[in-house]
Image (cartoon, rainbow, N blue to C red):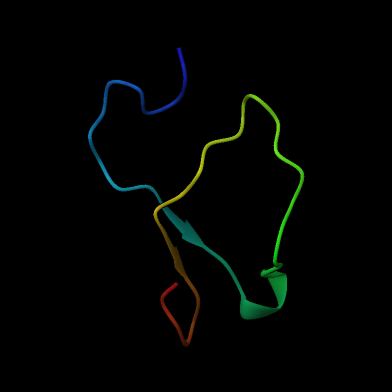
Length: 43
């Protein structure tokens, strides 16, 4: 079962802006996030 499959909650990631990239390779165990929070912005 995938992470969060039974939970209807927003997934939020914390990051520094220099860590953001346009794309990453995805694997079957990766979970997409709904919101990314940095010190200065919300994505």
